[in-house]
Structure formats: C-alpha cells, structure tokens
Image (cartoon, rainbow, N blue to C red):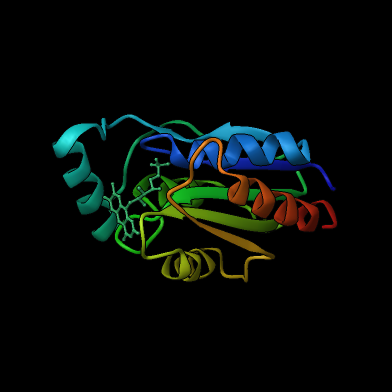
Length: 157
Ligand SMILES: Cc1cc2nc3c(=O)[nH]c(=O)nc-3n(C[C@H](O)[C@H](O)[C@H](O)COP(=O)(O)O)c2cc1C
C-alpha cells in the first residue's frame, strides 16, 4: 500500500475498534481527531446532534497531519445520517485534494450511505472505497473478515 493514514473520530470507542484493527491489518498509521467540547452523557449526545445538524464550527484539540501520506482513510460514527461535527471541522481545515481518500463509518442501524454522500460533497470528489459497519465489537470474527477483505483493497491502492 502507498503510505496511508487512518484519521478517525470516536465518541464512545466503537469507531476506534475498527480503526485500530485496520491499522494492525494494513500497517497504516493512526491519527485521532479530538475536540474541545465534551460529548459525554445526555448533554453531550444532544450537543453532538445539534452541532452536526446545524453544521456548527467546533474547536479541535488534535488534528492529524496528512501531509506525508498518499492515502487518507477517514473513520467516523454516523451522527444524524451525516459525518460528526468534528470530522466536518477537520475537513474544513485540512486540504486533502492531492490524496486518495477512503472512508469507513460505524452506526447503530442506519448505515453510512448519507455520511459517505456528505463526505463526497465536502471533498468535491468520490471516495475511492468505503466500509460500513453496524455496532462493531472487539472480538467479532465477521468484522475481522470484513476488515481483512477491505484491507486487501486498501493495500492495492
Ligand atoms: C448525536 C448522535 C447521532 C447519531 N445518529 C445516528 C444515525 O443517524 N444513525 C445510526 O445508525 N446511528 C446513529 N448514532 C449512533 C452512532 O453512529 C454509533 O453508536 C457509532 O457506532 C458510535 O461510534 P463511536 O463509539 O466511535 O462514537 C448517533 C450517535 C450520536 C451520538
């Protein structure tokens, strides 16, 4: 694989499970986006939905640098059928036009279709390949198999 970076955001750790497994399988580096605002508890859940639906500007405290990489794999939970506010903010401030961009989403039921579409609109280009996963769990053989298959695709980029 060309030099690849997994840039992910995770509120409750499910997207992190996928990001870490993918990194182990492909050797891609990992970078986590972090934001200043707390998203824990019921208030955090509500503010997460509100900031995402209204496309609010949010302050980021960690923004992985994609400069040395050819391939960037964006990982995120689906929030209100869209990329979470922190991922939108990251993409506002981080030019990726010279990269091959892929994406994965985790969600509880809706899947990532709307999120991938929104990402392509923000980026102004199609995603090279995507992976959509519901309710990831650490020791799920089906997730492992799907990541091995997707990892092989990524490695061929
Ligand atoms: C504000 C908010 C909105 C959400 N909206 C959706 C949704 O539209 N569809 C869905 O299936 N799951 C939705 N979820 C659930 C998350 O996408 C899901 O639990 C995800 O795997 C969490 O990933 P994380 O642990 O990496 O944060 C939402 C969660 C939050 C906090």
